[in-house]
Image 1 (cartoon, rainbow, N blue to C red):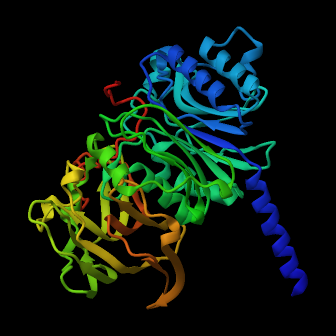
Image 2 (image 1 turned 90 degrees about the vertical axis):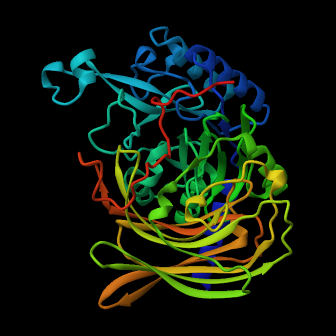
Image 3 (image 1 turned 135 degrees about the vertical axis):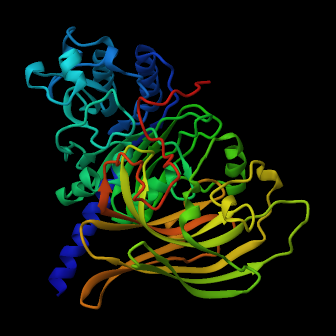
Length: 512
């Protein structure tokens, strides 16, 4: 036993030491509509942030503004810096990685020659003789392309091709980390995101253009829930557009939570640099961050109106209740809530949120491009007692008061134990950032009911919260995922569009 304990201690120490010696930057970038100019600005950012030796720099999805007209051909192990046969922007980025002596991850449109005579369903192949992929490219310190990942779960990207199968791409680095990679919308699916975890990776490179949606899927909220739920590090670099609600980047260290990151809420570009767990970003004032979000566009998921909900009576100190959602087959999914609140005096000239307990198990449409199974137990903020006011934010933060303090919250539910079901701890504060993981507890234990193996999930706060917008268990049931039906998903339970607009090409947004 002593020998085993010693081995475990040595392993834990070596893991900690590995992370202490790693320097990573994730860049939240606001693009212009010119691939060459964006590449030049990438390179300027590299020059400005590589005063400290960096091991990896990650740029967001679609911020090069590459498309079919500026798509590139390449192979893994090509070094564009050593040849003039590549597009200028690819050559220059390869040279920049070499000059900066850093690994570099960028997102672009890749073209791959195909046989028109063998094409069956690809208009791109038939029309152009090429497949076009939304691709993440990883350069090493020499500027060599050491790996690439083609996005599998496309969202409205009709000019792009989907790979035949999802790729599980893993890169071994010279700084001791084994890195997976996937892009934006991929994070909500089993393949490749969850499948990558079987490959023993240390972290994931995650370029994204994520358009935040209340109440469960704002950018940093979604990033932390995936990292926290799977206890895996995520290097998230988000495209930025204040007017379109795109933004949110960070380095999330699994159960340790966000180490460095944020939303450039007023629009612009910022690099967030991770330099070990002991250099965690200083806490920022929640109210100051929230005020900056006033002009940041947030999508609203009004499909919560199809959930089973009850208003939380915050004038009563303690609430303990079970809320069950019953589907069309009379099957019940039940959520258990234990909540303790204190209520301060309410000022008549200021707005305040009311809260609802919610439960749901069923299918929702991702804006008509895919269907997905979700299982949710949660507390969500509403503008008033009306269900139609839920999942919205008051527009002027200075006019908001917070009379409700949650002293305790515990949410629990039983879920099927299988690879096709997964659950995440999901939270959101008024700053449109998740609650720090040190202030919550997340657990899962196996139980058996009626001969079925289940997993009981519990999500709790460990510190009182009084700037709360969302606190939930967000579950996915991959068995219910499908392509949309011609009947506009009439079989689903949610009629509202899924407005998680996470795509690289289909949205035209204002660049200021």
